[in-house]
Each structure stands twice: as structure tokens, then as C-alpha cells.
Amino acid sequence: MPTSPIPLDLVPGVRLTDTAKASGPRVVSADHVRVRSKRYEKIGGWEKRADEALNGLVRGIFSWVAKRGIDLVAAGTHIKLYSVSDEVQDITPLSSSGTLSTDPFAVVDTETIVTVTHVSHGRAEGSIVHFDNASAGGGITIDGTYTVVEVLTDDTYTIEHSAPATSTDSTTGGASVTFAYEINPGLVDQSYGTGYGVGGYGEGTYGTPRSITDAITIDLRFWSIQPYGTNLLVHPSGGTLYKWDEPADAARAVAVTNAPTTARAMFVTAERMPTMLGTTTPMTMQWPDRDDITDWTPSASNTANTRTLQSGNKLMNGTVFGTTNFIWSDTSFYSHQFVPGDDFIYRTDLVATGCGLLALGAFVVTPIGIFWMSDTNFHVFSGGVVSTVPRAEEVRDYVFGKPDGSVAGNLDRNFAAKTFAGYNKRFNEVWFGYVSVDSETSEPDRYVSIALDEDFAWMPGTLARTAMTHSKQPIGTVVMAGVDSYLYHHEVGLNADGAALDWHIESGLVALGEGSMDQDIDGFEPDFLRQEGTITLTIFTKDRPRGDTLESTDYDIEEGSELVDTRVGGRYAGFRMAQEGVLGGDFRLGVPAIELGGAGVKR
Image 1 (cartoon, rainbow, N blue to C red):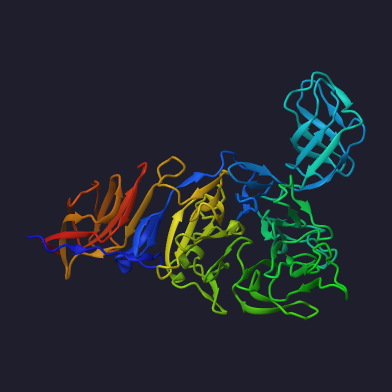
Image 2 (tube, rainbow, N blue to C red):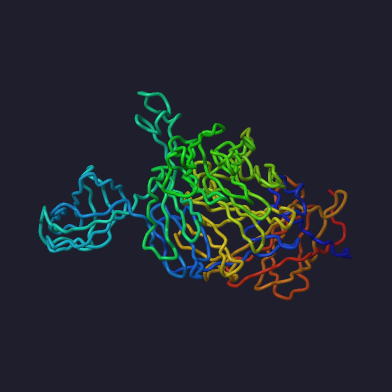
């Protein structure tokens, strides 16, 4: 005779650091699933924000409602900077502009490659250049936008025209060719510098070339994007500071006069003070006069300052929480507190060590605190102290591995600099995206999320995104940047930009009975608050937790099904529910149950 139904009440939050048996009625694998009000459900879908892909991979994103009432997103790629509403506007800063020398172009019959002569041009391969007012030569006119194909010398480089020349002309273009050069692109991947002349002044030993073991890290291009009144301040890592005048709908961001020429990151303090980190040395920070952001030289008559911190190897980023400013190095966490009336303006104090920032974008501010990833753990600053995020031990080894190497982590440390964080306001969730060791693109492909309202329930998943921000309009949506260089609104509908959004959830091993008897699972009682489309139920059984799978059988749970007839047996069972290829599929799980037959064979 069947026993009374045994509820399968899955505990909220994944557990990835125990054996399947120890996990029991816990989730041990999931994708595109969240916890809300203690129950599991599918995450929302996504749609493209604009039909145009951006040029490059987004490494820095910010959402705000513009003065003109439009919901805007600023997104910086390793090549360009954009403002995006439902259309894409290129606001990439220029590094220089002017008029070239007479006849700066050389073309060759039947070839599309054009050689440009410009003394000390400063271009890099892949940079964007614009020409105007050229006269025809060799049957073509070099006007418009081009990408630098190759840098030949300090004074020459090549571009590719849309059509081949019809004759050879080594000096063409005329005397009125104007140029506008966008800032050079940054690195898509973090790199390392070796040899002579690498690194800032004072780093290393003079006259000694750097080996691979003491190489200087060359950051990938990351954009710090911060509001500054009605304008935006933007900073590409390794470059200077720029301002974009959004109310005037400026064509491009423009350089802030006298700002440091290079820095790793930038943030604006609670007192509206742009602060650049990693300027003259990796641990040096600078800020301008509080009344004039073009005055960066400290003097007795202004409040500009330069400060070098000690705990760490390089400053990483900064942010504001409440009315206090905070700064990370790669090893430590500082407070940066405004002091009224003090000539130095700010007091910078070490708050904690061993909790530095893993990547320039690996942090996010929420109403309850700042969350971030270091190179070994997940941290939160709340209530005046830095602590490990609650329940982080349930996923920590899965992501980072064990310090002794006995467990390999899922995070690919070669690409840890691409790690990012974001906040989903609608569901009060923190998300961390990172590159896994299984990534086929060396770009972020995995995430872990934390449901702050659900006792810090953690959930893992797969998602090919490079940056995340919370959109202000429509309320409750999230904007993420894809590895395909499109921007997406998330938490919209049930599908993945018109394709099926697959999901799954899997339990640990549940003991089916006491003692040493096998049990037959005769039925599965579905319990869904929501169900759209057929759900595949997989039941797999084992005789011993470390033994081979005895049976693994798939069953269909149709909408409205009251009981799924099953015929599997064993001493332990695991349960997996999933939808693959189901357009418009959805679920919200209640408390399903299993019906067991009588005692089976004694073992």
C-alpha cells in the first residue's frame, strides 16, 4: 500500500559545498531561478534596449533619468562611450583635432588600404579617426569615419577605404583635410608589461628590466561613470577625466582641464568632489578644489589635494554609502570622511584589511550596505563594519576554491578583472557576474545572486553579460550588457529576447525510508502556484550516495496535472525540474510531494 505523500519542501538557497546526501532537500544545481517569499521561481526574461549593437564590450554602465525626462544609460566599451535611450548616441571623447598637412594620403591602384601621414599622430591600432574636406585622389575621396588598421611609424598609419583606388597616388587629399581623433581604445583583456620602461616613476629598480614574475599589470579598459549635477563625469581607466553635458545634448564628452592625465578609476564623493585613484603612483589619489574641478594643484588658497595610501599595492575604486565615502585598494578598505573646516578636507582611515576589491567593477551599493568580491570571498560593509556576506560559505568554495588548492574554484582568475556586480531593486538582489573556467569566450558567463529579503539565499546561474545597472524607468527593470555588445532590459517577460529562456532546479539526495530497505516512488504530486508549459521532471535513484545511478527517468508535468505516475526505486533519490526550449515557459514552485510504495528489498 502507498504511504502518505511525503512533502519535498526545498530549503531556500543553493548549497554547493556539501555532498548530495548532506544537502538532502537543498538545491544543489540551478539556472535562471530565484527565491522569492521562500519559494523558487523562474527569473524574468529580457529584451534588447536598442536595436543597434555597441562597438566593443561594455566595461562600465550607469542609468539615470535625464533632466529632459528621458531614461538614459551611459555605457563605456573598450573602444567607445555611448548614451543610450531607445537609440544609440556616440559620445566618445576626442583626443585631438585639427588640419593635416597638405596631401596626407597615399593610395595604390586596386587597393583599399590608405596610408595616412601625420607627424606624431599618437594613434593605436583599432582607434577611430574622422576626416573631412579631402579632395579626390586615385579615384577615391577619403572622407568619413575609419578605423586604424596598422600603425607603421610614429608619423604614419593605415586605414581601409570602402572602395579600391583606381590609380596610384602617393600624395593626395589636398590642403584642407581636417581630422578628429577619438581617444585610443583600451585593452579588452588585462595584460602584463615586462622589460624596460614599464610602470610608473619610482616603481621597481632603475635599469633593471621586469620579468614575468614582477610584471606590471596593464588594466583592461573600464569606465567609471558618475553623476555630477546635471552632467556626467566619465573616466576610462588609464586616461584622464571627461565631462558630458547631457542637458545640452553635447555631441561628445570633453576633457576636464588640468585633471590628472592618467588614473585607474574615479568616483564622485558625497560632497560632489571628483576623486581620481591611482594617478602618479598606484596608491596615490587626487581631488581638485571643491569650487573648481579644473584646479588640481594643491595650494594654500584652495582645497585640492594629493594623498598616497599605504595598505595595498594599488587603489581600485571608490563609492559612497550614506554620507560617507569609501575606497578600496587591492587588499584593503578605507573610509574617506569629509572634515568641515579642515585644510585637508578629507580624513582617510583604514577600516579593514584582507578584503580588497577583486576588479574595478566588482562592487555594488544597496540600501543596506556595500557588497563586493575580493580575491577570496564575498564581503559586505554595513553597520560600520566589514563582514563576510551571510551564508557565503554555501557558494564560496564553488566560486573561489579552497586556499589550500584542495578544491578548484569555478572563477577563472586569469580573467578575474572582468568580474562585475549589480543590484536588482525590484527583487532586492545583489548579482555578481564572472568568467568561469568553462567560458568559451573568456568573458563573463556565470553569476551568483543573493536574495537579501530571503535570509541571504544564494543562487547560481549562467548568463553572458559584462556589466549591470538598475534602470530607473520603467520601474523595476535591470539593464545588462551582453557579450554580443547589445544592451538588454531584464525582468521583462518570460523569454530571452524572443528565444526560450531555459531553467532548471535540482535537489540533493533524499533518503526514501528508514533502515536498509529500498523504496518505490509510485507518484509525484506537482504543486505550482504558476506553470506555463510542460515541465520535465527527472527522478534519479541510488543505492548508495557515492554509488552509480540505479535509475534516471524523465516524466512530463503538464499544466494542471494532479499526479505524475512514476515507477522508480532505490534508497536515495534526487529530483530535477526543468524547461528547455519552451517558449513562454514559467513556474513558481510550492511544496510538491512524493508517494512511496511499500518496503522493498532489504539490502
